[in-house]
Length: 582
Image (cartoon, rainbow, N blue to C red; front, top):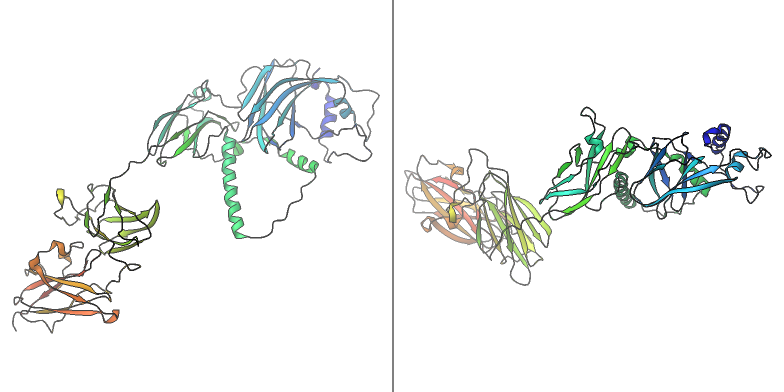
């Protein structure tokens, strides 16, 4: 006879089980008396979340209506394997009439432990979702669902349905629930899977079902709950690390509460699974009703794991496909040039309309494994960045402009120099065209040298301006002055005669090409070269008298700081006009 035929016994059971006082052994209780623990009755068509403690068996109860032809029970573990079984228990129709209510024994308790039989219908062990479907047990008074986690604390979702058809609580999976890989690239992967009947049978106006694709570099997850638990665990670990850094105090052991308080406190947490708990921010890389998904912005040469879930917005449930994994392709190895000792290298980016890059290696000479890398951009319009690394470790990264950049290299036998030009040249501006092999336009001038052995970058003049003295200007000579350094260096002066319409007195910025050095000037333009050194940087001023000039003519003067290492440093051009009459 079904339990529904005993209404007053059920009422007594519910009153007894819902008692607010913990049921514990007392000194006056007989040894063979086993107190009843709080029970959980699950409802048909409702998804219940159950907390499982390590090594403890949880029992859930439900009954069926009379003449119900069959039933189905679905159990979905979260992130750990569990054991669960379904049994049908038959109880005696009526309790013993001779027993009366007492403080030691109750009629529901005696009736529950009285004569009866129990038959096991099904059992399963694993981490995947599983469903039992079968006919109802006519003699059953109550059905008992037992769940147990042997190794870890975890949770699971449970639901049951009366009848032989599908319950509709969980989305349907196809006969082949595997996720297939259609294509793999360097930064993208394309997936496909057989569509779910829950989505194909869905009316266009309804949007209760959709696919959610998750990607991670660690593992496949058997359920959406497992993916969310893994995400929460990572957040807790990061938070614990931050808290340990902030406070360094002695952690005293926490005294655990009695077992009955622990168990009773945990049981009320069991509640129907809500949409917010099950579907809260899964961070889907693909979301919709299409059974094809392309995941982009992945890292090259990295293995990723992909999971697909069918989501049900109404019931707050999900079903998991069998995930897959794929490894993205390796990044194409770029051509790497070799920087020779003291070689002046003109770097040209072929494609002027997009971002481009070039790679070079440099091996310093000598046992000190040190050197100096100097760079200079040939245009103010281009944005060039240099990154120097050694053994996959970035040493420095900085922008390269029209001013000379010095990078001190030390402590490694080999260096990788990465030059990257970002963006495009703005309209109306062009770089200085240099006669290089292939007719290309140079963007950066670069040189590497092992001859420089001082620690750190070399000293530079405090200013790169050239000064002319009007009182010392004559019809055939001018006097120039510029700042030097405390290091002994060679200074070379070049001059070029210009017409009156090409430039006037003052700075000749229009004639000043930033990366043009003395190697691009003819020998006839070189006026003089002199060595200079001054230990006091505030007094490091040198002068030169340039003679043999024509009266009333304008000349452009350039001064270059020449050294054995690094590219020459060019001072700002200066235009000076000789006097017509003296």
